[in-house]
Amino acid sequence: MSTDTLPQSMVALVDCNNFYASCERVFDPALIGKPIGVLSNNDGCVIARSAELKALNIEMATPAFQVYPLQNRFGIILRSSNYALYGDLSSRVMQVLDSFSPSVERYSIDEAFLDLSGMQDSVSNICQQIACQVPIYTGIPVSVGAAPSKTLAKIASHLAKKQPGRQNVCVFEHADDPELLIWLKSLPIEEIWGIGRRLGQKLRQAGIETALQLRDTDHRWLKRNFSVLVARTALELKGTHCIHVDDAPEPRQNIMCSRSFSKTTNSLAELKEAIRFHCQTASEKLRKQNSLAQAVLVTIRTNSNRFGPQHKEARAYPLPQATDDTGIILKYAQEQLELLHQPGFRYQKAGVMLLDLIPYRPMQLGLFQKEQASISEQGQKRRQLMQTMDQLNDKIGKQAVGFGLAREEANWQMKMAHRSPRYTTCWQEIPVVKAN
Image (cartoon, rainbow, N blue to C red; front, top):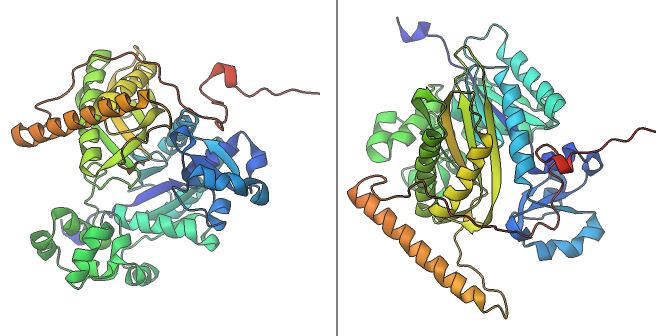
């Protein structure tokens, strides 16, 4: 069969608009139209903004104490991170997406790729339905971009979100679409999915400055002089679907590690082993890019392609403080797994996602708090231990040195002065409706 007769792949990227702020609005409609900022763990700085807050030039990572004086003047609403709510609403969005495609790949807490190849209905109609039905069923507005490859779908999704006339949907059915080529010609190399600033600088030195120039560069030359991923990105810009989520670069604010099992299992012990493996892999990636995670999300799912009872769910949990410590991340991930696991189901896949990454910084000691010094010393020793583990694993082999299944008990408490209720996951905080 010639390549001209092969069926063309079609991929859609569904991206939740201003996800954390949108979650806060689902059960509090009075927040619609108001500038909303979601704060990091312990209410330290702004990690998510509504469109209205962005319009006030409040930047990401702005310390909360700088925003407090502006609240009354501009009507700014600040909320503490409510990962129980965000994780649950994310799962609900994914459940809606499952009804549109047999293949849904979660890319981050607020993004997912859908395989729309070979659908009976037109891709444009399906994307319109997604953009309409997800807000109806979940309250979360989404933007949908579709194209023959994941990289082009990312570009289409960006245009769907940023251009009001598109009504949150942008579809390029062919990689040679004239409008798409115009955008590729103006898109800086650094803004392509998976390229980034450092790699973009190297490509610019080679005379490749735009997405269109990368598209037109021979992928074999790119593989020899840069990497396989850069070569695949060039092929993706031409419409060849060749990047998978597990191979793709992680989003700047998330690290995802997941794998399907060779056989389904209902064993909690086996699921814990998988989560332990993924936590160690994700934590190593976290340390290599010199970042800290502020929350962890655990996801498990059964095989949707087989007949029988199905279960697919995810839970996010805020870490006591931003960390790159495998032990701490593993402890909270396994606690979430125990809450997710249901004995009557056979699971095919488990994964871990580290959320809201920030650059590494040493722990800041509290004034007049002597006990913080010993805690800081322990933290430095733990970091040295993690670095030693990474060095041994790099030298001996992947996860040659790691953590067992032992769990430490601790009661961590965090400052969450502005947290909204956990409307969907806590019985004591379910909203109450009173009729007159």
